[in-house]
Image 1 (cartoon, rainbow, N blue to C red):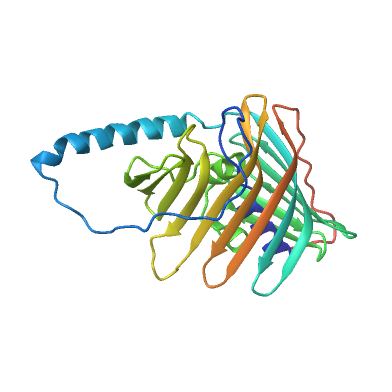
Image 2 (cartoon, rainbow, N blue to C red; image 1 turned 120 degrees about the horizontal axis):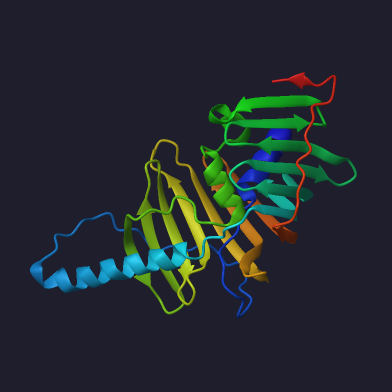
Length: 277
């Protein structure tokens, strides 16, 4: 239970960018344009339109990156529901604390029982305790995939939690513009990423990360909604995650307390009598 719950919490803690709130945006179903893998030879007549498209792409990336949340400390409390093909759980309570570039701290509780798991992640290591089974997990961060089930390093996890886009690169293509949403695709070494951003302020609406290894058939879809303005930071308090590989996992999250730049502690001890793995 602990391995699955911790992995889901880490996967599910996602957020969005900045800007003041002009209206409430509900979580919507994920929808991306159909990708076109064909490549067309550009003619001289296309040079002006290609130049215009390149300029637009650069401006779009600059505006999107201008929404990056900069912080020193961050904390949040949230409720999590998740569903897999095998089980459903609701009313999970998660408490998260971050110190930028150094510590990610997670506590997970369930009704009646109380705290069942606690983890502390640094750029080099992951330590976690399963209070229900009295087991401690100690991992080098490079070898923590059996607990997290995701190939993310510390910085990517940090961006995922705080709400900055993950796997956003300059290799933008397949841009589709509508009056309300701009969709585009970009590539990184391991993944192809699709993004939907709102056309008025370039805040993330949805993103999808797909493994380039077609044999894995692994993807993660992230959807954001119910933004609140928190001292110049725009934060999505409702989120949905859909993870698919051999099986699927659906996660819904509701943040009910978010704080930036407050003093934080990161308590973590391994009780005596716990086995270690």
